[in-house]
Length: 185
Image 1 (cartoon, rainbow, N blue to C red):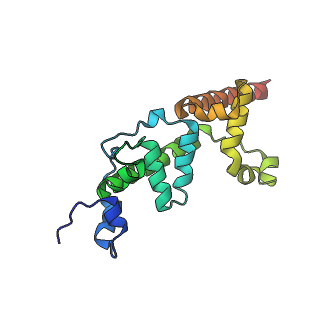
Image 2 (cartoon, rainbow, N blue to C red):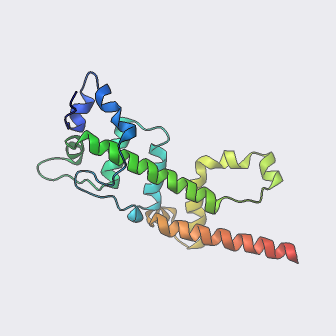
Image 3 (cartoon, rainbow, N blue to C red):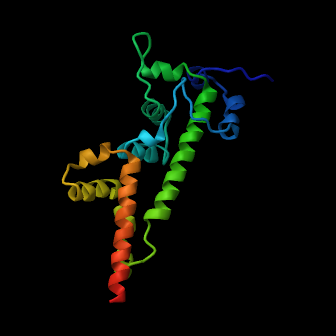
C-alpha cells in the first residue's frame, strides 16, 4: 500500500490513521516545520519550561500550540498560524515532534547532570523537600535570579534559556567550591 503525503488536518479527520501512526516513532527527527526552523538557542527560559510541560502529558492542541510557538508561525492575511499548521504535511509534524522531544530530553539530562547536587542533606531528605519543591522549581529559580540581579521574575522568564542555564551552573559551582573550602577549614 502506498502512503500519500497528507496534511495534518487530513490526518486528524481520518477514521483510521493506523497506516500513518506507525511513522510517528520511525521517522528521524528534523528541525523543520512549514519551511521554518526552530532556533533552540533563542528560546527563552519560560519557553523551554513550556516545552517541558507539554511533553509531560501532551494533547493535540498542546502540540499545535508548541509548534506554533517554537517555529514562530505567525500566519498572514491569507491564513492564520493555526491554518498554516494544519495545512502542513503530517510527516513534518512527526519529524518536528520527535526533534522537540529529543531536545527536551537532552535539556533535562543536561540540567540533571550539571545542576543536581551530589551532596544530600539528610534533613531535607527527611521532609521530602525535593519532591515537594519540584512543581515550583521554575518559579523558584526565577525568584532567586530576580533577587540576584535586582529585577522582576517576569524579566528572568524572557532571558534566553542558555543564559539562565549558564548563570545557574556558575552559581552551583561557586556554591560547591565555597562549601568544600569551608569543610577544609
